[in-house]
Image 1 (cartoon, rainbow, N blue to C red):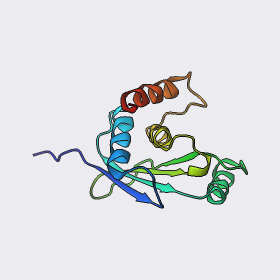
Image 2 (image 1 turned 90 degrees about the horizontal axis):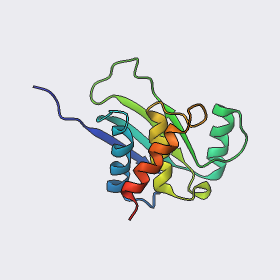
Image 3 (image 1 turned 90 degrees about the vertical axis):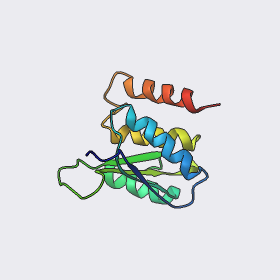
Length: 132
């Protein structure tokens, strides 16, 4: 008997996007890479905090909209696999929903800085599905 696919989402910090919508956006973005289960944490932070994280992890001492921290899954854990963390700064984000999709696509291994536009094309397609 196989377990049902399960996506666990943890939201930290104040969000203007309802949890159900966050879960739907994450599920669509992750499904684009064939991922149907796992744990993702999303944290909404201040401009100061995202500047600190950006400087520490990317060597860029400036605020940004979204950072993703994938977890490679090398160590087995009970329950759904740990996919990683997404950190979003609402002050520097034009569209929080798009930032969630963008961060999740990075968790799947996509990288718009090194691909030939594939990640941003997938992002546009997902946003076209969810934008009224």
